[in-house]
Amino acid sequence: MSAPMLRVSHVSKSFGGLRAVQDVSLELAQGSLTALIGPNGAGKTTLFALLSGFYVPDSGRVEFDGRDITGQAPDANARAGLARTFQIVQPFAAQTVRENIAVGAHLHQPRRLAALAAAEYVAQRVGLTAQLDKPASQLTVAGRKRLELARALATRPKLLLLDEVLAGLNPQEISDMIPVVRDIALSGVTVLMIEHVMQAVMNLAQHVWVLAQGQLIAQGSPAEVTSDAAVIEAYLGHGTAAKLRKMAIPATQATA
Image (cartoon, rainbow, N blue to C red; front, side, top):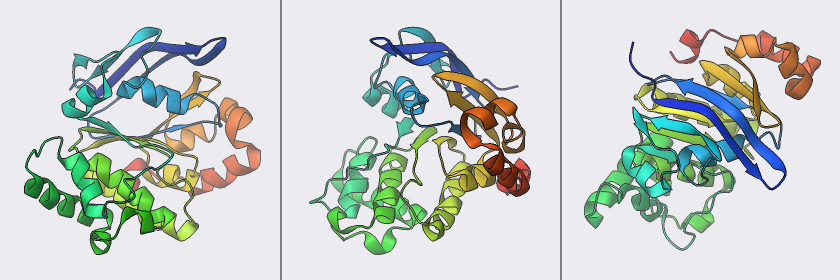
């Protein structure tokens, strides 16, 4: 059995008296598509910041691809193959979509022409080919979300952390984005996604981790976590949980 792509062991982080992340341990198998869910303020984005190096944990250990990266700087993590997106999308507004994506490609492509060529390929993968020469400032919310995804994907990640990449999208835009995320995972990139859009979680995730008040309270398949009493109490509510259980499909179908 191969080693996990990511292993998090007893990681904690406090800010003053606020214990944002408390003794969190989890593992991600290589090539998996996993979701991290929980109520607002649960500590999900803080955990992403700890994994990607934007915060240093007070205690615990983070291993990526067999190496200890606890507290390692974000740029070093990116070069090693760990990339993330951000909830608040902030593209370089005066640059074109092509130039924005090329910023990510420059991590491995020092020559400008090569980076721009790589940007075209990534744009095709996320559905931005027709927007390549448009200033980023002119993109819709959905377009900016795709651009944020493209910039991270251009760094050629082994592990991609997606922080609410579907937030702010309408139902049709969400439906259009789900296959994009699925195709990234099918290409061999390990994906961990923070998401409140449970339609996407039920359709995409093979495994779900549930965080509440900084602590992991449940894990399992989408069907299992939507039946968990603690998850229903802390996050879903009985009505939502019942609807989601009807929506649940086996992970083998979700990633087919």
